[in-house]
Length: 436
Image (cartoon, rainbow, N blue to C red; front, side, top):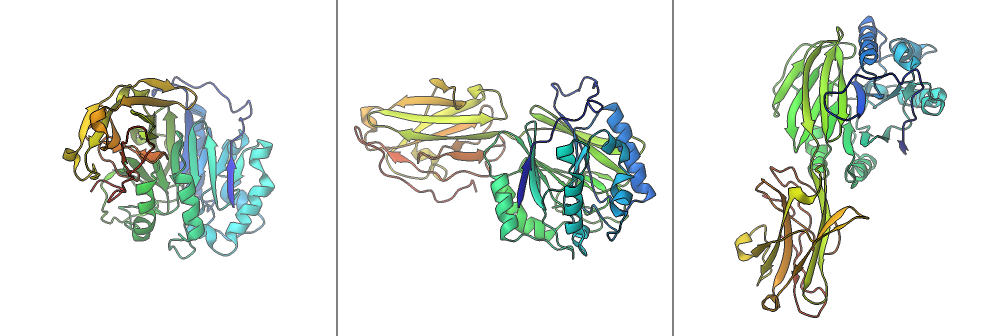
């Protein structure tokens, strides 16, 4: 089951004035925490620090990275592991969206948590509290799409069957300008005791290569950590809400910071920028960094009868098409321009019009009589970068993510031969979908 919701407006007691945010316009303040559910004094100290942080700058929502319950279910379990540690935040209407971890799958805990979430009914009542509508679900919130995916098993192994794969593929590959934030319990990389998760790297990471997220948060390891962006996706471990563990391991990914103390993360979205800050129980920011939104471009191209060639592209994450350069390529033979660009004559183009209803920018190129019988493609790039991305000449849409440094996911590339007075002919299939 997939659950999708738009969080309700918080009660008036929650809507307090905020200081001017340093990143620009008003956005979203999110709380991320993980591996919390034992009701210990340590967990309560983290809850108290969260409340003080909220009083300074209110959170719009809270998200866990899993392991919400370490104790067997009894009459007062959820009161002990959730309601008491987070009482003040629940009292002002804050929704706590839960991700499923391996300890949540022991005994009958997942069913118990789902039943507790239905009983509390925090979203419908606007009272704040525990939210777990399904084991995998999506939350849309002011331009941010949170994707909570249950990829865990009780034994600590990866659960990436057909249902989990289909859910992630559908949600990650959706064509949207929203921020995409992936929440899983298991991390991809870690310099903590467990080290890198081989199963996540081998099975889940290839999907993120094709349909990337903008941010990834995980738990499982009991510390805080940030890794250098992979495919423009920063990845974080936030699993230090009740204990920290000693011990270090090597990772195949470079770590930016390792936080070996109790705490949580504050995630601040402002337009095309996001800041992630690790905060400890003394409410000291021990590390923070700001990241720019991934640039996403998509569109299509086609020829028509006569001598005109149309191409349109929508660029998301930047302002307007002025950031784009476009060229029309003409060649006598249908050679893949990725493999043999020198075969193609590329002609700089200008944008001719703007398609207001769809938000696309459109250019129209006039082909000459000398172009009859030749092949036509179009390509785009961000100004000041070296890599080009090619539009899909089949009339379908290009859905690529372009980070200005590498083109990880080129669409299926086709070229049309131009025959004056006729429709599109001579489709050419590419040899590959990505830059080597």
